[in-house]
Image (cartoon, rainbow, N blue to C red; front, side, top):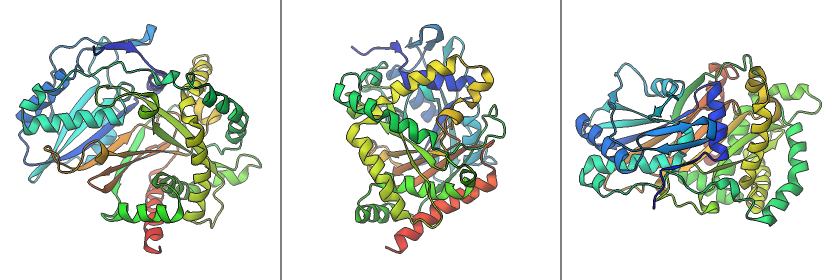
Length: 431
């Protein structure tokens, strides 16, 4: 029987801590074909959210628990004024806190009306779900919008999936390998350069979005295969090269000269969580580091990163993220408010992060409810001052770029965006 109550896993508890400092939200935007019927869209959203059991959320902070009591869905789907750009609205949603008292509605829906089509924006309180769950929710809404009978066929999701926290403990071999590699991981963290936060208490997120060329995906896939790296390795390398000119502070340190970037991992397959029936959050993470000397080429850097990511895959070290977070949570909870704001920048310094999602694997092109484009955005949080959210949809790549404005000025983000795009374009044009 599907459960509607449970306890937060370690990732969710950490996000709840981050949310105390500033809003920790995420946003998905799907462009749907056909003209907008606002009443029909609102009805589809309410019917799907109710059918999946996602109403009446009550959070109990004292016991780290939650439950969905059910009940009718309500709340309007608000059209965004034509004078407001998509990126500006996403930025507003990232920085607008969800209420935390009593029953919580963890979703906000907005709609952008365009000629002959529209874009559905879903902002959500990130601790309740990861990107996989949200894509499935948006897909259900689109299907119910096309045919109201689709909502009646939906079953309630299991809202308390198995905790990924215990996955590493069930595999003694992986746990021993992680413990054996812990000294080296600590040594790497001590070599990592620390970004400068002008005001660590300022958690405001800036945002912008852009598309890679329509033919970028097949070209990059071919390039990655030629270099014997993954697409994710390629994106991590391009991100490092784009960030490096903004991180020259690292050359002033005799020891902390490494530029570190984090990457989010979906651990559903490793932890036996069925995405079709479970709604929630199942994530791991890892970091890669390199000094990125001036003049290093994309291929050389991507191969160096592949050595690190291959080791991560072999040891499944991302399953130990919950243990790392548990230690961090303990120290964090005993720190003063000022030290909390500076905690991650000091103890786990990252210059950027990457989250990579293939929507085509969850929502194939040509489905009954057609999605012609998909965009994501995520709050940076106190741990990562810049995040690239790369999404594959309809075999095209869209990128959401969120950044802490207290670390990266808009002029710097302009350069990072341009460098990232040009790096990939130059590599594919010369291969």
